[in-house]
Length: 260
Image 1 (spheres, rainbow, N blue to C red):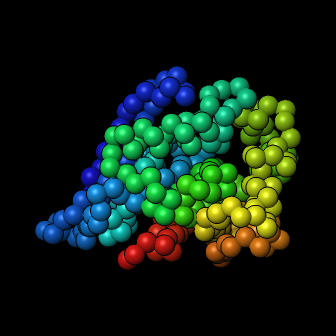
Image 2: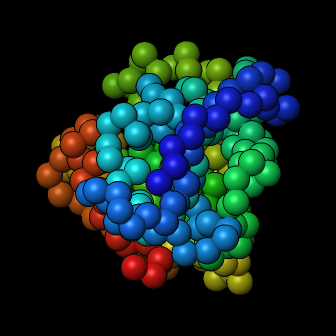
């Protein structure tokens, strides 16, 4: 595998930013690694970070490079700071950056496929919200999406009295808007997909029962059931921590519709 730290300028953000990228490399003599590269344009996973992290965190806290080696899968990890993957009311246009600029720039730099069946998105916590929002708002772009301990019921999470320290951030992101029933509300997006001819990316959702976002995850699961949206849902003992995510990113990768 090739590991690349990429610094570049974003027109959408009006500033220099970064992404961390893993690219497949076919190897035969690398000790302890079974790496493959099956095509010229690589299948790609966009892997999103959480609220307190950046584009380096997945490679610092997990063995993601080792996990994807045998899949021949490229991984693109962008930096979006504390934006909740949103065009902020008082800040930068991180949704535009993520969904429009980032894929175009990454594909101009690296040999990445733009075919729907070759593209996937996943993330943890804030990144789980971003991953499902991207897949549900642009279902023509992804074959599958995953959320690990995601903040999936943001319309209620914003109003949570147990998290007063988050109010300044939510004000910068959403202003005074009530996002319930909008395209920022995942439960609304799922409901909109019922009885439509739009493509439906496969969804993988997991959350620990001791996680403070567990009820958010139950609400999203129930919304999928009400909308007859296909969902792989996993819950069990676990909290909001990297031991859980390191285990479950491996399960997600094995679940992906990729020829093993």
